Image 1 (cartoon, one colour):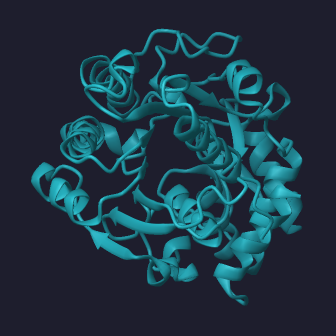
Image 2 (tube, one colour):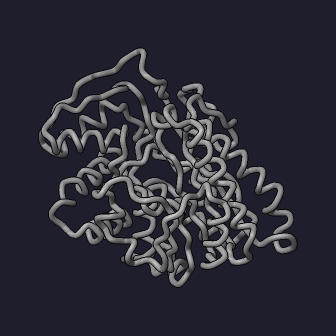
Amino acid sequence: MIDVFNNFYKGKRVLVTGHTGFKGSWLSIWLHELGAEIVGVALDPFTERDNFVLSGIGKKMVADIRADIRDGQKIKEIFALYQPEIVFHLAAQPLVRLSYEQPVETYETNVMGTINIMEAIRAIKSVKVGVMVTTDKCYDNNEQLEGYVETDPFGGYDPYSSSKGACEIAIQSWRHSFFNPADYGNRHTVSLASVRAGNVIGGGDWAKDRLIPDCIRALEATKVIDIRSPKAIRPWEHVLEPLSGYMFLAQKMWDDPTSYCEGWNFGPEAESVLTVWEVATAIIENFGFGELKDVSNSNALHEAMLLMLNINKAKTRLGWKPKLNAKECIALTSDWYKRYKTENVYNLCVEEINKFIE
C-alpha cells in the first residue's frame, strides 16, 4: 500500500473505539496496512455482513475488545492495560431515527461515553493525540444554504444531533480544563481535537434507516426502494475521505501538539451535495436495475432537509481536500456491494483504499 503518511503509523499503538462499526472497520483496516498496532474497543457488530465481520480485521489487531463506553471504569482499565499513544474515538449511537426511540441511551452513549474516553486519556500518560469524532449534525441547523464553519454554534433538533452538539461542548470543556494547549508540557502532554464529517457512505454499512444500506437491501431482495425524504440535501462523501482527514490531522497533532487541537470539518466539495433521490438514482444506475418510490410523509419524525459543511479551514491549514466527486464516491460504494459476496473482503477494502489514494 502507498503510505501517504510517510511511515508515521508504523509501530504506533492506536486505540480505536467503535472499530466494529462501519467507519471504525475501514479505519482499522487502513491503520493495519500502515503497520499500526491496533486496540479496538466496541460493542458487537450490527450484522454478520458488516465490513468488520467479513473483512476479519478483528483477528489482525493487538486486541479486539467488546466493551461499552458507558462503563467508565472498564474503559480506564483497558487504557491502563494497553497504553495507547493515539486514540480515535468513533463509538456512538449514530442514528437519528433510533434516537427518538432511545433518547436517554443515545445521550448516555454519545455524551457520557465521550467523557469516559477523555477521562481514560487523562488517567494515563501514554496518550499523545486524541481525535474525537462527532458529526456535521452537531451544529445548530437552521437549514441555511451556506456550509457551517467550525465556530458556528452547536445545537440539534433531535436527540442524536443534540447529543453530538453536547459532545462538542464537553470536548471543548475538557480541552480548556484538562488539556489546555497553554499548559502543554507542564500539566499534560495531550493534543485533543474534534472532527465532523458529512453523510458518509461506502461498502459494508448495513445500518437501519440509512440510504445506501436501504437501497442495497431492496436491490438484493428485488424490491422497490422506498425513499422517505427524496428532496433532503446531504453532504455525501465516501468513508475514506473523512478517515484520511482524521489520520492526517492526528499526524499533524503529534508533530505540533498545540496548533491543531480544535474542531475540524471534513466534508465534501459543494458539488457533492445531492438530494437523497439523486443518490438513490445513481446507485440504481451503477447496479443497472432497481426502482424508487417516494414514500415521504409530512407526519414523519423530523429529519433535517438541508445540511452542509464549510471545509475551507481543513483545506487551508491542513492541506487536506476531498479526492472523489459524488459520482466517483457512489461508484466506489456500489463496487463494494457488487463484489462482497464473491471476493475476499479484506483484500477488496485494501484495493479500494489504494484506488482512493492514487
